[in-house]
Each structure stands twice: as C-alpha cells, then as structure tokens.
Image 1: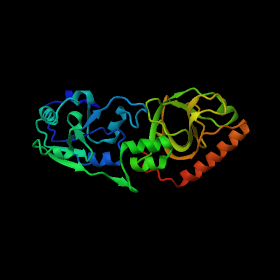
Image 2: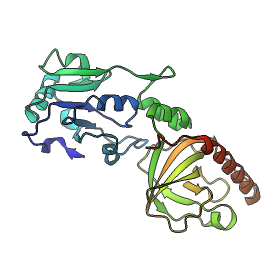
Image 3: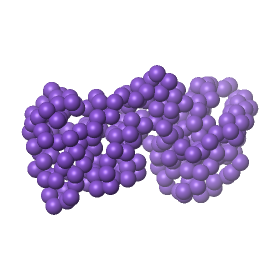
Image 4: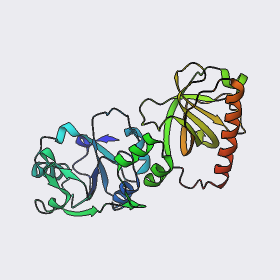
Length: 288
C-alpha cells in the first residue's frame, strides 16, 4: 500500500472506494467491484486494537484489483465533512465518483453519512446497501465475534473465503515427532486468533496446499504454554519454510487436557479421521 499523500495530482483517477476494509469480506468486495479500472481504494488506517487484525494492512492489496492507498485516521479525524471532500478533490482533481458502504460516516465526530456526500459536493456516489447471509448482516464486528466464539464456518460464510493466518515458523517442544504426530509451530501475533481448540484446516507451504489439522491454545497436557501448531495429514514436512499460512475450515473440538500421551494420541488420531472426512467433501474454490 502507498500513502495517499504521495499520490500524483496528475493521475487520471475518476473513482474511489473509501473504507476501513479491515477483513475484506463479501460486502467489502461488493464495494470494490464498483470501481472502474482506473479507480483506487482509499483505506482509512485505524490505530491498533486489543485483538489484532483479521487481515493485516500488508495483505489487503491481495484482495483488490485496484491499487490501495492509505491515510491515517488521525490525519482526517478533525476535518469537517466538507473539508474531507475538498481534500479528496485537491489530491484527485479528476475525481467524480465515490463508492462507500451504507454505514460509511465521515467528518469530525462522524457527523456525515454516505447520503450526505452528494448534498455537499459535486461527486456522484454509489452506496452499497447492507448485505446479509442467512439473516446475519455482513460486518467485520460480527466476523470477529464468530472467530472468537469458534464459529469458523459462519465467519467464513461472511468472509466469502476461509479465514487465514500467516505465521513465522518457530521451534516446538519436539514431542510430536517422537511420541505423537509431527507438527509445525508458528507465531502469528498480529492476527485475531480463533477460539482455542482443534480445527480442520488447509496449510499453505511454499505455494502448495496441504490438508491439515491445527491446534490453538495452551498445551494443557504438557507445558501449559500457548501454541499454534499444524499437522500436515499424510505428509511429513521435514524442512518447512520460514513462513506458512493456515486456512481454517471447521472447528472439531475444544482444547482438552489428557492424562497420558496414549490418550492424547488416540484423540488426535480421531481428529485426523474427522478432518479427512470433512476435507474429502470440502470444495477448495474459496481458499483465497
């Protein structure tokens, strides 16, 4: 992403989509789909929050065919509605068309709504009305709640894709390969993490997609430390890369404590069999 202040005034940009685009869900996609080929995206960059990101800033360009520029919220928070629109016109003299979601607010203290744009400027607007799936409005706040509640299937429905985290590969305990099943451990501090538990997943390694099961949570049966681990089904990855991605399909069970490695191994074997059945019928079209 590039900083909006660095954009050339000579750019022949006539349309712009504005929003936070914090998870690139289906409603965000509907907004971006209204841009013409020369349009751009203006992302309002918000301060960090407690739970992390559902989609880090450096990943959002992957979900837009149009170039994304960003502006820090602090740069515009004190502007009136008219001043904000004048700022856009100053930076983009050829701008004609603004595309936003129905809940878009702008101006100091969020004083203006999307419908006010045409009333106080010469811009035309396209306002994407609220979208729902199964009666549930598509909002990032809802998706985050479902992730934290472990309802990954519903979160994925609203996203229109599998929820994904990317992490740096780190050393684990070394127990899995010897006593249980080999796992790859990752560190993914910047992401909103789904509720602790065991999940059916896909794991992307060096561009290749593998069937997997993944665990998030404190290791109750060993050292009590927090871990994110993924086991590649029917494949032993001996030299994983530094970075990999995990795509969450469905939650199998909550985190549990086992009194022996034998019981834990028996449960993991059952988890793998469940995952195989689910992934056998899972359509992989919406992985990305």
